[in-house]
Image (cartoon, rainbow, N blue to C red; front, side, top):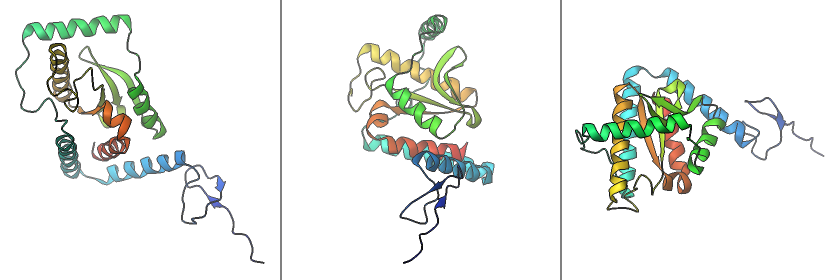
Length: 214
């Protein structure tokens, strides 16, 4: 009778485990995600600044291509100088009121994205404040901000090709916030609710690429 093969050892937590595939490196999906995150960080550390810049441009192009294919183009395309001083002041006052009342509560899509961030041990700040504006997540070690855009509230053109007046004002706010992040040297990426709920593999791939680039 052949002897039983010894158990495998997880390369992340060093636990013993059994698996039909003897090439398996991790004992669980959690450890697999940690291992993937560690590989991404290692790849990131090996890249020089030119390589990172080139790869980041590739990511943005990939995101834009996917949005065009899904009929969900970025709203900041070709739009500059659209904010009156009155609009900017309204944006500022509305955000200050939110900050004073501490009304920033996680939405379902924010919770789902946060779970992915935590599972990959990515240091982050929820409800990050920059120039008195609130952003969903700041990935602290990567100088990157992530926004989770609800389809209805932010007027996903896949469902709202002709935004209502109040949605147009929300779009202006998003554009203004984009400018703030860029001015302060942050990368920003926005994910639609539809993608977070129905195409999360796409969201994961974009974040993985971002972490290797920034």
